[in-house]
Image (tube, rainbow, N blue to C red; front, top):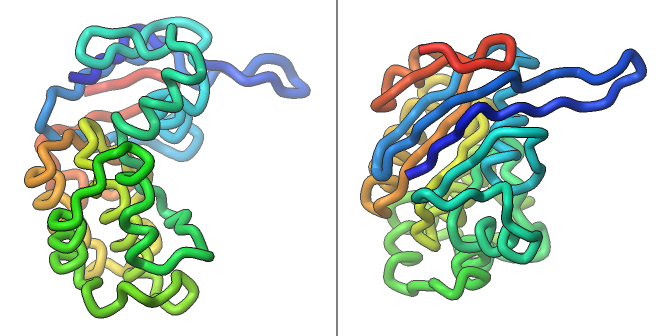
Length: 218
């Protein structure tokens, strides 16, 4: 279970400290999905970066199965990023020098959990089986996003963090990719926290909440 308690985060600006998160409380039970919504600048991406261990909060706690994430030293945070979570971003962030097969296996290999059968199953479900020897530049945007989803789920992470994962796709493609993502998250035994601006897509997840002026509502 992922629990966020009274999380605060600010950033220095020329005008002084900018308060982005002002006491965020959030719970993501194991095996469920949560859509995080909010206007631009409300702190959604900042929260995801904190949950991923890419930054540290000013105060408050992030608990993973009761253990505080934010008190870990950098090696433990790096292990959390390798083994505990999967990340899917709108920009894909594929490794251009690796083909599809190697991109799919990349995080699972880092985590020491590469499963050939599971990886092949993900490729088949994501429509990538005939594209394994291609490189990211040879793929469409939708195909690259599917590779990013497969890579994030290949290690069967406890938590999948997705920041506008279908934001660059058209409506029909977004619906298709999200439906597949939700199915694969369930099969992987993962929890999903997804940032989205779309009420339509948010309605597909089990739970929804709004981030407004640095606090979670609903």
